[in-house]
Length: 270
Length: 219
Ligand SMILES: Nc1ncnc2c1ncn2[C@@H]1O[C@H](COP(=O)(O)OP(=O)(O)OP(=O)(O)O)[C@@H](O)[C@H]1O
Ligand SMILES: [Mg+2]
Image (cartoon, rainbow over all chains, first blue to last red; front, side, top):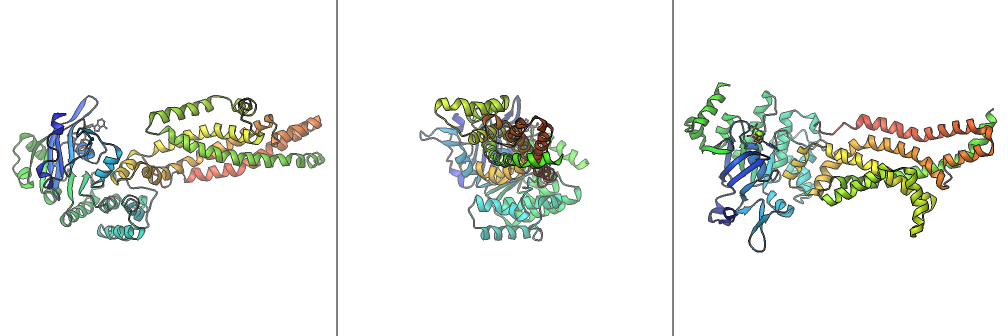
């Protein structure tokens, strides 16, 4: 617990939006993350790359509060995510109320879209702004239509998810997450469930979004060209640890670790 | 030949009213109980889960007739006096509510986890997740099961004749008692009447089954 309690209200909480401190995660007997330290600045775009099973999804799912870290502290804006300070100043496991407050700054787009199939496209995007943010129907609609037009789906407001292509569904999912205006948005391989010809349209939408937003983004991806275009920093994860990180230039052109070199060359070959 | 039917049908018909009233009242009660117990079965509180599963197993595992007798004959000893109709509705509602809760539970659990995760990512409360995302999809899956259960419930109503309620079966037995040669026509009339009451339910279930898969994520 000592490590957990060390300067949580740390001085550079302003320049750090998300902080992972020695975070580990095990599923049963397997240790999936073996002590991850990672800082993300407000507005920063970070691409997370690494072989299958290296723990990329697990890292962002813990930030979305879908998975609980086994040890270590994840903080958001200087405040611990999975813990809260009790009256005696000790860190205790967070309750649902604390998690909900923290979640309001975090959004996520999933590999398999997870749109609500019983709602029209418009309602998919207005539902949370109305019920969670408390916007009026008109405000929510305005915000949603605006965003749906931006992702090129202004003519699909009344359609249902099953009537859309995978690429269109994923663009709705992006709009649905963005209208909540989180401070950090998580993307988990959002194109890997798509037919190859639909990948481009979704990546374009994310690139445009990245350019004009001051949201931070963590993008798990296997698309190296996309990572190079969109990211300020690329983090290479290997076997539950951060093996190397740096600017796209550094990571993709001059990888220093052998594992990263091997990973990239495997990638370029196929 | 037809005279027999002209004679007995008007005598039996008032029983159909009682049977339909019983069907409607106990279906409503069973539906409410099914939702309460079904949600209880998937509660995050272990106590709630165990209590509701004790209720479900108790009422599914014992005879409806004995439950009805218990409510009508045994509870008055503790100061709970039920009219025959209320005893019938209570027993039917509790019994079929237990079956219905399994339908509710099954449908809720059948909704893919991605739906819950997406609603967590949108920062919905637990209840919002259930109300806005899970239940609207789950209810579509429940409807055929509810339809089938209400047909079962209709058949179960005939037991109320044994706690002095003058339902379809009771009336039929009365008429048959007055003239033993009526036995065959009486039971033919009973079968047809139960079937006619069940018919809308049967067609309803058919229709619901066709629609059940629409608008639900294929897992
Ligand atoms: N709920 C779970 N239960 C058990 N093991 C899990 C669970 N989730 C993930 N794992 C395991 O944890 C490891 C890391 O998984 P994770 O999904 O984070 O990897 P990844 O880097 O996202 O891989 P991919 O590129 O294939 O998506 C894998 O070995 C996986 O099998
Ligand atoms: Mg993954």
